[in-house]
Amino acid sequence: MLRKGAPRAYEGADVCLAIPGKVLSSDDLGFARLARVQFGGTVRQVRLDFVPEAAVGDYVMVHVGFAISKIDEQEAHRTYQLLAEMDALEDELPSPDPA
Image 1: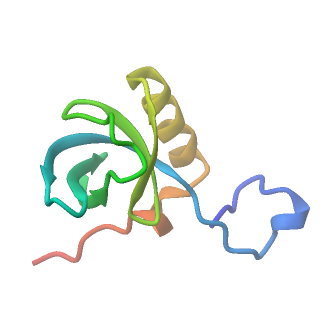
Image 2: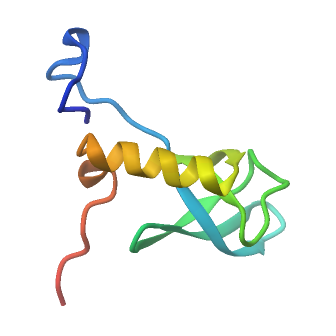
């Protein structure tokens, strides 16, 4: 959800974002490719079906659990920083509950 500096048309509206992350590992299950992707300090399982060229070490944009494009490392870091400055990451990547 966008908050700080959101255009007036989006005030109070929930907006889903694509978040950049780094592919840590990849598994081909035959019917799908799954990857472990790191977003800052969070690691999530992501489908690579739409980005078959993505490999370990690559950066991808992830939306609702699917990698939707491959981007370079510099763009990934720049985008992540902008999202953090907008406080847009806390809703998309909530902190894990302490054990």
